[in-house]
Figure (spheres, rainbow, N blue to C red):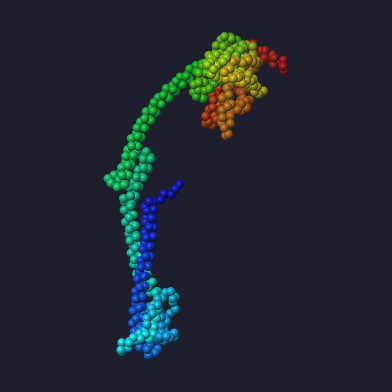
Length: 523
């Protein structure tokens, strides 16, 4: 997250840097000018002193009175502390007549002035008798320059601080405060307060910005109100459409439930039963059948293509075809009934022979398991299309596998334009014994994902639960299956329709007696 910086601080920093740079340049320039002027004044002073002293020394030099000359230059150094050295030379002699030096300083800090010593005679005769050399120190010039600049620097600093204070207050009142207000209004607008407005009345750039913001806020408020109104209208329309659709689907569920066997029908031919029927989308692509036939009962479970509304359409079609096949052929040959349903589905969906108009034929159908229960004979005949029959006894779970093909689908390995029928199905006979539990179910339960790793529930888990609880009361078995499925699913979306039909057959006395005699003979 970037750290926010104050515009006032940034502007003040820029002003401070600019003013400090300009002030430093001005101070350096002033120092150079003042020091030059001081240096010229010192030079003029040195020339004046040298000229005056040269005239005063003309007599002693002419008379070669070195004592008088020495006293004169000593008196001069006493009166002028800026003098560092004075030397008096006679004409054409290198040895000084008189000399004095004050302290040892760097020669670079000195200026030297030299004047001839001239003797004026009575007859107006002029004669040069010597030379006077005076060295002046420039240290006082630098110090005087610094002393002169101190008030200037102080005044400059005070002016800078005052200018910054005045500029900061003016900038805050005229620019920063309106910008902060504009930022607050923009934040309020971002939170949904589209009625925020900024005070206007200024004719400068800030006033233009405020007018533009107010126009933008008014436009956004108008568009937002219009959009919210349209969204509300569309939402109400969608809600009404959704209610109509859901009413239709719920009514379709009632119609679909009407084709399922009633509890009385199930109890008439079955000692115990349970049905775990969980549609994925209100209506289901699975259905189950239990109907009475002349020599017993028929129990069936089907899994049609798709789920939801398309699956429900298929269940109505497949259920009608199954009942029609049973009415025409009877239930004694479940394999023949499956073959008849297969042909009817192919014919209804135009999946027999070549596809019409050269297009691909439909690839839809169903998986179906059909059991013909003959209580009088103590026998059950099963035929299945990809749905097995599980038989649970005290010895464990036995699986009778159906044929590995479905009803109505295009056969595997055939071209898309070929939709012909395949071979017939197979019947499996089972002797009915007391305590047997029969389970028919679609693949929705085994394929449901869940658990920590999101894997499928699996057939092995189902068989283990049937092995443990399949011989007990079926109501308890249903509760255990539902609880286990809910824990395993753990809130995950249901992948497919789930149907599990468990039942036990009510044996007649005539059928039970041979079973008991067979049991005694075997013993």
